Image 1: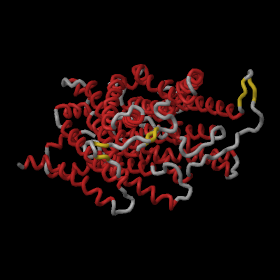
Image 2: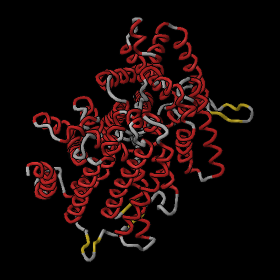
Image 3: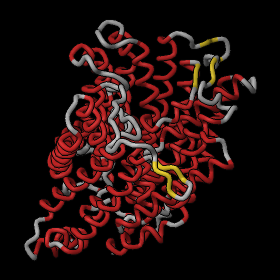
Length: 334
Length: 265
């Protein structure tokens, strides 16, 4: 019984937090429901990177590529192919997974800095191509992407879309968390800690890295599709390097040692940048462009220097020091 | 690149050093400061920035994993860019060319005089760097740290001081590049990332371990880009650059990675 409570408890807290968001966000400054939707979408994309970085120990600064593949698949298939949004969304995830698989065949021959550069190059390349092709709308993008609808229920308002995105996020977190506690997850953890040790104990490291890359890509594509259907517009900015960096920052700030890092990171980073957007222009008259990245950068530096485990990781660690649970194993990785 | 050699860290903030140098120079020139003084101030400020980045961001995390160090330099890069946006906004700034006069024609090709300054500065920087790294005590100490940190420490070289020096030197080189480029391309606060990535591409293609390699890599990118412009619409230029980077990393990692793997064994 106690075991069951311990198993279910985090999910209950998480579901509760997701459910009270609308009540809070409509009442405090800086926050609106659209901020909440953005947080939920980015948390889904970040979740993939948590698995890739925290468990398999691989970096990717090209997650926007898969986010963009999802977004553009949704946009193109619904506006030009006449498919329903749900089918387009699934197609985008499949396509992103396929692309990630093929790229993963080659990209994990390198690691560390080279992997970081290779993923950046891949993302930038897709971004520049999307800016040129007619099918992706070139520089102007694709307008009029239909809203998501399940049966007769269409998710048009920010509030209804939030519930949809939050539900999807919840499902993804549950799935990923269970996956990470399986044999596969433990193998990944071994891989992230020491590749040599992992492969000498019979773990197919190349295959595991690739699978993880595919998982991260599919989650990013899911987030991208959701965003496309929510703002009903997609252009090449969806593939921007800045988005890849944002996802990386959210993962690092939240902490990559646990799945909870993704929602925590997305919440903190977006909340901070929202606050910065509202307050900084009053202080600095010359301000311009996407200046809120200064907040991303500082949050990232501070967290990395003072909370190497990320915010969620640090909280979890404090808790488990009191009562060791099965999760202590998960915290070995950084 | 220099930073990579000494500290084993690819510095994603390098492009921001170029931006700081270029933007600082252009703003000071617009303010009416004489060229030489403006260049000195801009370069000096950037070197200070490099020192701050190393001391505040990287030195405290000396023991961190490679991934964390990468992310730290990214954090530093976007913090610098963000601060520049907060303080200077997005407006481009203009600097006059170093020497006035009509474009020179060499063998039928017409070249702006500023390009000669760029070539001159590049050549000078490469030679000076080579001289520093191979002929001076400090430069040799720096290379020793790059080869083997523990051994360098045991003969009395401080890796931490060398890493600090390397960052300052990298900032100086980056900002010199920025200063000579400023009259050609009006700098704004957002140019750092693109410049930095182009620089990496050059360095990776040319080989991360020799200063001359970066120059060769840079030139070959320029050539391929202009060749590609003949076959494809010009908008694909950047896609081609990063496509090449991607392919080089994928197909020839063993060639490029050789010394890295040696270090690991």
